[in-house]
Length: 130
Length: 378
Image 1: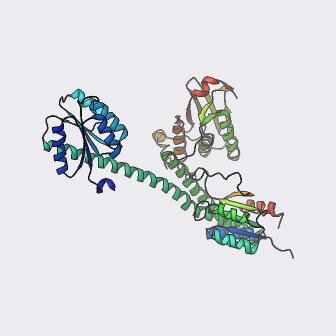
Image 2: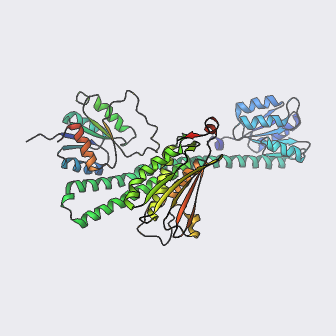
């Protein structure tokens, strides 16, 4: 029996977490959920997932980016694929945000809601199948 | 706060000592703090230092005239109320004073009551003006916050519902029978159109309060049309409607925001597909003259009744008697009109019932580029 790859979801919307978890579990992954950035970073350290999906806009705008920074700063987080999630439409007040050149690498930016097929495909691309 | 809690500050600029002192006594008794100046320049310096709420300025003074003083004060001191004191009250001088920013004028000789009334009225006017501005600022801020709020709070649940539908289909889709699948698909569509309605409404609100991000650059209209046509071709094909363009080889460039304009065209074309039966045709024809470039989007659809034509750009307006299945956000054409207006352009519709509808989009010629490069080959 193969060991399931681990995915960490960090989002402050419980329902979004649950819905996304169901899709990823159906895809054969083991899914962990964190409802805030702090918990997310702690879980990252204790679980060492193979991939993390981080919501861009949690309690405060930019929370997701600070989480990304903290994860990238860990030993295991240097090269692990990280996805950012955004429901922010680009016409909004946040469109002025541009990551600085030295900004940590984001492997993919996903827009909410994300189609189940797309999500599983993007994850599979990074993790090389189930 | 400080304006109300502090005694209002009144400045008197007059070269006549007796008048200065008389006014000071009257106004101090009314509870105002009073500053006086004999000369114009002295008065202006005092005003810049203390920012009085109101200034009484004598029209006829040595060195610097009252008109000059008022002109400087009205520019330099925010919200100052200026009252001109004059011995030669005439319509001409009153009009000039008003033009220089005076609120009122006081003809000499005047009695204490006249002075009191005029100063009080001036200060009341100032208070109201400041309050009105504050309220307007608050209202603008609330509007902006509201848009941000809506954009997050109203869209989040819709996004989650659609994500649940994705999850539902993923985990159990295969075991659903046809009816269940159809119910889920219909739910998904209705949620999606509600989401679109929120988006459209947000866009319109943003155009109205000037926070829609638009980058106006020189654009080649044919490439905008090509992008829009490309985007709409699959839908037209699916509905059995042909989509044709008729664009002259040479066209002047226009100034605009590409993304918004593509959305305008896709909206108009999308709208035409809703009301054009299979086998019909949608044609985009571009023409230009020295001043305008116009795009006609014509369809061979069911048309719009004459009496409703003027209403179609109104938010949530829907033609009566039309097919109930036809649904949209009800804001698409409103959005198009707002975008066209923000491009100094226009949009109009003409229609014959049973024959079709034509939307005419007008863009003003781009002044900068038309001089440099009047005819751009496409």
